[in-house]
Length: 273
Image 1 (cartoon, rainbow, N blue to C red):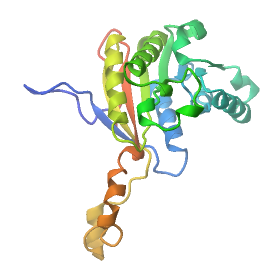
Image 2 (cartoon, helix red, strand yellow; image 1 turned 60 degrees about the horizontal axis):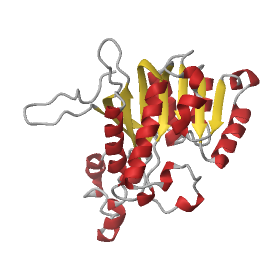
Image 3 (cartoon, rainbow, N blue to C red; image 1 turned 90 degrees about the horizontal axis):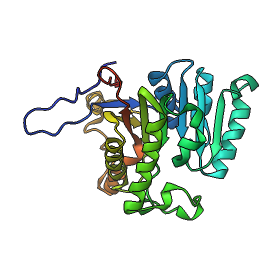
């Protein structure tokens, strides 16, 4: 699967990872984040592999991994989401499949202890990195150990601990996908990706790809619509009054995924299409 950009540089340019764009909301099937995790599991692991989901929310990655024949392990600190994950596993998996799933209600930074049986043996780790308290208004309902309660250096240190734990779970040649969900506040998205990149370097992981996971359907081409006789694209829909809405459209319409690789013999491989 060839990347959109091979990451090479010319003199004077900074190196950059290949960029991929994944339309995760086109077909009206799975919810965008569910489609994203399904594709990560499908592309970066094989049946029989071990997959871990840190900060797994309501358990969708665990269900998907089990349905696709992987052994799934997970950690979620939020008690309400953990209970929702338990219900989802009961509702969507057979008793036999549920035996392939182990998950804990705990701080994911404790993965070395909680997931000791799969330490250094995991093909894929998917970890959701929540935005910091500086970019959210809902900290009051978060669990005391939730990263979303932190800001500044405390947040960066916690993200570092999470990524270091995830790196320890990986077997050589395995991948860590850090998902930074989109939101409506300027600045937080870039901050998380930067924190992620520094933490990955410190953990000895290679930053092999940046994935833009689109969470809104892609509409038809504007030039084509203009040629069909509607005049300037969108002139009947958007005007000057919509400028503020247009500015805030970008971040909520995608998740950033930082794809990291634990080095093994031979070069890392990008997965963008």
